[in-house]
Length: 478
Image 1: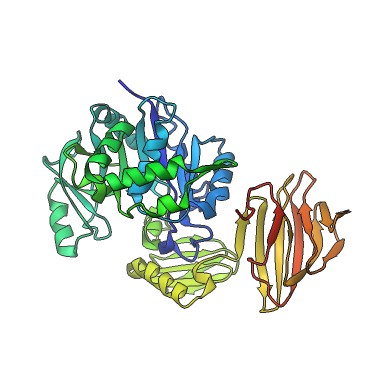
Image 2: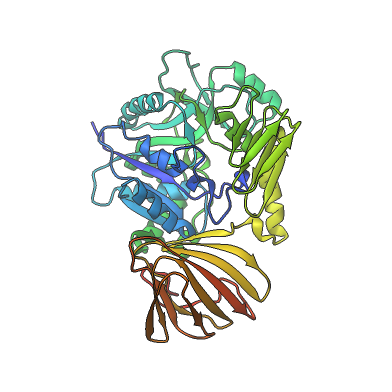
């Protein structure tokens, strides 16, 4: 019996339904929504620790988030089998195909446990026990979908219908009859009463060879294009970068549509573990421990005569009086105020912000980089002020700007500054001017974070006005 389990973690989503906290520059899977400061991605990995014969994970993410993924794995002492970079987002079938093909290189036929990186599981014990059951079916060449036992007639999830109803106590795998996309309210209420239906969690388990065989049978164009994309991929630092041209040809469809709706090997295994995909702010509120009036508050907040609210502030004081059933999320540059029942519309609103080219719809003021981060404090069309933090031992690329000059003021730590081949060491309260067109680099030789204020001035202060000549993180133009 094969018991070697390789987790496949899908990290490619943008999580726009949790805007303004989650944005393209830092999606929800990388956020911490609990008091332990662990991100949803980190929790996804750590909750698997109770499994035996667990291999290192395969992570698949957008190339824009590669350094965030690598850093978060480093923080929990996980050394991934590989981090595969998608040149652009596609649905789950290509990602799973790539992972299955990759897992067979130099290994015996492993079991793959496919998980989203942004789900919440309250009962890790029940979760692990259900996965152990899945191992038995997967070793018999079945393709397991983990179906969530419904707690309400939810219209935001797809449903899986089995041939035999599940029971309340002992749940075994049942053959899959059909998949239903997100139903209307009437259908969802009907499904709720029929114990053949479970929510489609998007979590799966199977042998690598089994899923590849079914892909070849039902959607050979996916497995063929993914094979080429993987074979022509390049290794870039800690990452495997898929070939862009080959990957672009791959059909953009889900594993449900590509395989699960067609295969005769599908088995649904009911899971009762306090699962949530945290797909809305209302869902976040539901996962929280609330006060005796149903309120959850975080940050500098104060509520008076209010109930059933979620109020979060990252910085400013937020005061609510006489509020009921509201979601209030305050960040440094945006505020969301919504009734709890309307939070599923946040994604639609974010798309409208993007169409109107409103930058807050896409990115935070705080932008993470492999060397640290920068925070945009204030800006205009011809100038900008940033706070920059560089981690100990790290450095930015050797670069120049065609349209702006920069002034750096050190406020904490020690900086090693290169400007046009001249090197200077700066400490707190010292500064330096970087003329337009000068080659320059900043590094932190110390053991504590380096913090500085950067003042940019010029005809254009966009982030794309960077020409890199040397970069330890492989960000040079190809």
